[in-house]
Image 1: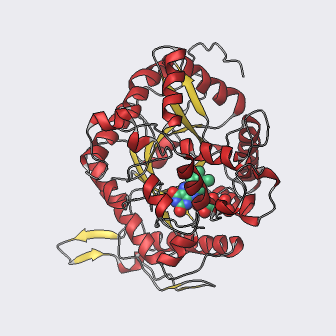
Image 2 (image 1 turned 30 degrees about the horizontal axis):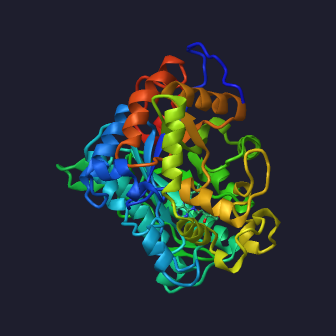
Image 3 (image 1 turned 90 degrees about the vertical axis):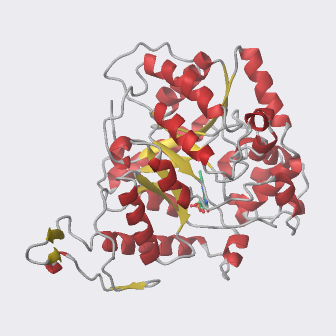
Length: 448
Ligand SMILES: Cc1cc2nc3c(=O)[nH]c(=O)nc-3n(C[C@H](O)[C@H](O)[C@H](O)COP(=O)(O)O)c2cc1C
């Protein structure tokens, strides 16, 4: 992909940017907790001040949202014990991100605050109440990444077994249906607050939902008033056909990982086409491709930073986190086996991450190494100008509506991007210079 030389123009399509976070010592990069810049910054990942700082920096950069992943387990998937996960901090420990959302919103005014919350182990009434409350507390800036969980360790923590894909998504559809009924159980003007006549809420404007489905029963109404966005903005990250159905129906934004340009382009076309097919305006769901930047003072310096970072990830860590994300014990395979040729059903997941950008199939060890470095997100390496070139080329030639940024160290990497790359994107007319919308959903659909 040759970068195009863009001129600023008000008619250009604008990028959306989000920052990926984990409430733990590592994000996508298992090098993060050992990285010399993380260590030198002296922040403690378990103290809340770091996250208020990150939220302020991302708001300074006019990002759409800060976005937390969430897993509810420490995995023994690799080799059947917890050792590799604990030694390598494979997104473990991982503290609950939800309490951080209102804490980060309190330190900011416009940026969205989003988190993953799995629908696999809770009841929709609890989720509808939690997210409506968060939407109130953040003045309409809440975003919920609705995931279904596949790891057996997580299922076991809730006393359950891993669900089959079809059941997992059938249940997720009904989960959302119940949440939406509950969010609609209060009309917008139900709260009257007529002190004189002693009417707090108009009983004709609050309804039971009387839901009885295959998986859930709920009587309603919700005991939370209608929130600014009537529930949070919905984000999604499933990739199977069933996962795509779910995203196409409900999502305001999708976090997608497609390391190869050819797959990213096909995915973008497919999702937008499916949206049109069901009568949704394709612009109402943004696809954000994951990307990990390495910004240097020169090209050579940036490459040095990338190499230094990648060398900090032990292969054992990569094997452990890839095993956990696949829910398949990779210690059972020879390290030089070709991943894309394997027939095990679990290895049909994340298939597009099993090849190099030029299409060459990768071995188990190669895929695991890339997974430990960035879960196979493409690494964009260069000066700030060259990173902006790469982003621009991807955005205009491959597709997507923007990027989910993944840091190599924290704090530090996010600040570098905001201070060096954002102004370059703004100069090219590729990124906003102010927030226009008020709510998370409005900012995700902001076009200028
Ligand atoms: C980009 C991306 C991010 C994800 N983040 C999470 C997460 O934070 N927590 C989680 O439990 N699952 C997460 N998942 C897993 C998905 O929700 C889903 O369980 C998995 O992709 C399998 O579903 P599928 O069969 O539709 O692909 C993520 C998946 C993708 C592709």
